[in-house]
Amino acid sequence: MFDYRDREESGRASAPGRLDLDVSAAAAELRRSGVRKVMLLGAYAGGALSVVAAARLGGSVLLVAAREDRFVPLKQQEELLRVLGSPDKRLVVLPYSLGGWDILNLSSLADRTIGLILRFVHRVTR
Image (cartoon, rainbow, N blue to C red; front, side):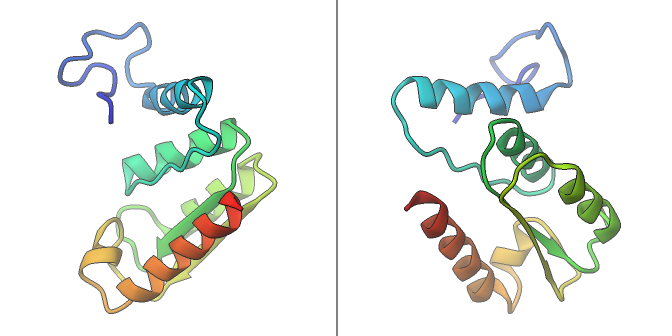
C-alpha cells in the first residue's frame, strides 16, 4: 500500500494529478526489490490507473466492465483496450449495471467474476 501524490502524507508532487506515475513507480519498485510478478487491481480510478500502469510496464491486462456502467460507458472501455500497447489484453463485459467493487460485492455475478479474475491471475503467473 502507498499514498498517491498529493494525498495523505505524500506531500506535494512535482506532477500533480499524474497518479498513473505513482502506480507505475510502485510496481517498478516492487520489481527492483525482487518481486517477479506484480498484480494490480482496482476499481474505477484505481482500475483505470492499474490498466494504464500494466500496459506501460508491458503486463497483461484484464478489464472487467459492467455493460450498463453509468460512470464509464462501455464504448470508452472498448477504446481504452484498443489503444493499450499490451499484447495480452482482454475485455470481459458483464450484464450488470453497477461497476467497480459492486460487481464483486453486490451482484449475482460475484462468484463468476472472482473466478474469472483468479483464472487470469493463474494464467499470467505460471
